Image: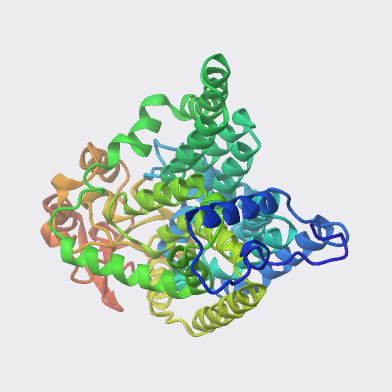
Length: 534
């Protein structure tokens, strides 16, 4: 075994028997595998303390790779939705009642807390929190890899997670979105389960689920580790009870705090139409294949050595690439598939198990392969960072124009309804929404990841149009902006909204394809700039 001053050699060089001119038989391969297992079970210690050197490196790498995230006020509609939700909550809104979305509560509350401390004019606080989330995920993967395979593997897992985490479309990789904040919890769940800390593992699974429902998929590898490591009988039942209790208590507590029925509806039962697959098969398949290819390009430095180990039958591979890692990857893949939308940011959930599998493969290969993998990851990361710097900002420009129109036609204390899929316009305009439904998708089932099938009033969330009509009747918005721009959810195809506009509003202007409507009873009133409401 290497000394503290001697760098660990590759497993392949230590475990492969000398060449004798003949192919080793089954017995020789079993002996080589046994030697590799003994070596792998004794992680090598590197010179000097591990964590004081690793943690600053991971934090700096995370900050550098996420610098582009600070270049734009908003990267995608998810950020705009969360920012608008946070303002509504700060103004007295009630989650799952007057502030709604199909997501669990932790991230809206994080945005609300960040705005309360740092102000709500910028998203830089949550972008900084996203840097910490990536660094925490990298550190937890480093700890898991180090425990299994030694210091070098710890460095490998931690350092390589950071560049692959930005290997997606910039709108998916650089945003402070649900998946970025879910990853530390998923990595923590496996870290705890690997150490047989079942109660803590359950808490981590709950944390992942309460950021985004698909984070609960990490319960499968945690349960698998429990089943493999705890003997049958009373001890296993006790461990299962701790794991289940750790998961159930936080979820049940937040369900009680937000209302059982509302929590269950908005996080579980109210998304049936949204998660359906019918009518958009080719569109969905194309999107899924494209984002899979983008992920593969970003993770090439990990996928290539993993493929080499699987193809080459390297001794010890089954003891390194263990079943729990494959279970974790499979559970994450099912989570990505769920809902059949295949947005790019969904694929972030695959990264922790992929990084550990790639790290294990590199541990079995010669050291030269590690250098090649690091170079490949660095090059692909550079390409994706360059993409982030020059990415098309047409969506943001449009949202700004819509926000400018909302400001022109309303006073700061007046409400506006933006009928579209870009809730960031509410936040950019600094105007309160006239409805709890911040996107037309909630009321029509339209999604940017689908074509126009199964879109209409009857496909919206249950009871949504009844509530929407009540909101409009009780307090009609001063301005309605139709931002559908020819999409299947246009007001002309929505009888309720079409009749409401015809009865109470008239067209004021067209802005970048969006149509601005003002109330007809504003004719004799002046707006906040002293001009007519039209």
